[in-house]
Length: 118
Image 1: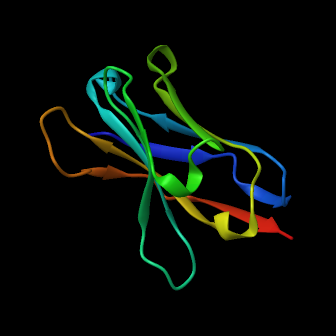
Image 2: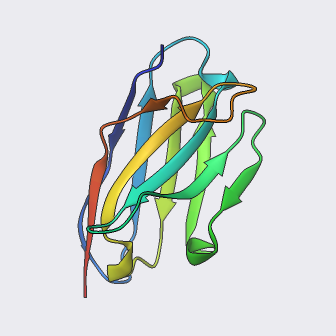
């Protein structure tokens, strides 16, 4: 069982930056593949970025060059650095964990709200 708690969201202006954190419980965090998702009002949840248990990263095209995912296994934490934020980035951001060899994200946090004003 893994519990995830996100933090770091807030209300910012276009062009500002935020760093989201996701703290995980459990002693096997380093073995999990981690993802950041977001869901905007009236839209489906989408994968934003992913980092594997060996540090390989993936980004959706819409945020490439602006967002950076990273992890600190010693702190059981995964981060999402959000730069050059735009109003279209407004959403609830969720982190999720996927066990080794699994194809689905099994564990989810409660989400943190990011609101970007123009």
